[in-house]
Length: 108
Image (cartoon, rainbow, N blue to C red; front, side, top):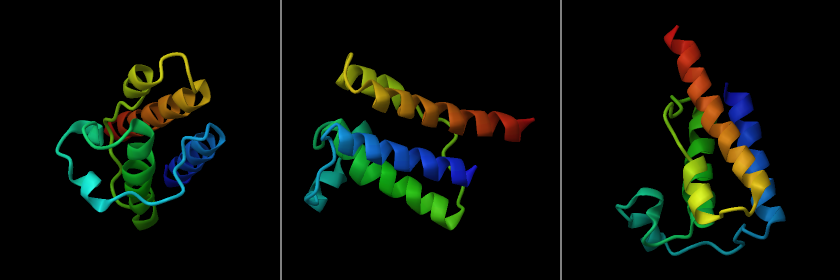
């Protein structure tokens, strides 16, 4: 489970870079203090993916901590990038399905 998650996170990072959605400079830490889902009031979705989601997920994978089992990144991508960056959409969908599938398998 952890290896596949790490692979999907790397795939997401690579795709964000390929689409020029990866930011080289760090963001102001204050922007991360948002109380809104996806930090919609302070970050663009690609910034949230880079500076919040990927960072936190890699920390969970490295520490072999419990991974989230109910996420839905794909709908946000569809709202933010309708008809654009389809490879990123597919990877986000794979992440959504992977984590949900692992939860379903653990429940059996």
